Amino acid sequence: MFQIAININELNYGNLPCNTFAERLKKAKVMAGFSQRTLSIATNLSLSTVNELEAGYRDMLTKDTLLKLLSVLDKNILCDNYCYFILDQEKEMKNLLHIYNINELSTLLNVHRTTIEHWRNCKYQVSRKQYNLISNLKGHEN
Image (tube, rainbow, N blue to C red; front, side):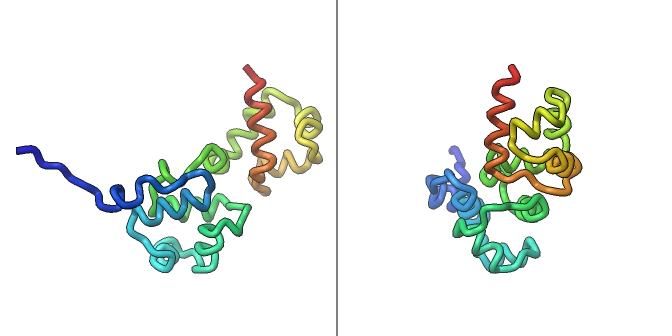
């Protein structure tokens, strides 16, 4: 006889939409069996932070918050390309600066060169809007 292991959460929630971070967070949370409250406790994030992220009210996701969520949630569900970029921002920015000099990059992204330096040193985090511009640049590298 064949034995089939069925994850009841996968069966119930596997088809939830995953187009936004809020939708991916909700899916990852329910697939792992967490409520907002238990996720808050497990990650040491405030309940209001979890609620605002899941509702889509927070546009800016910090690396620290993402790492806390990834300590208990499935990276394959939660992360999109922007999340992966945040996790490797320092390396990604250094790679870009091997292709473009800092003045070229600041002009292309319409930010001051010190912003680029702060991104490279991870003092500031790249916003999703700026990430989209960077992605377009990376698409033209080849």
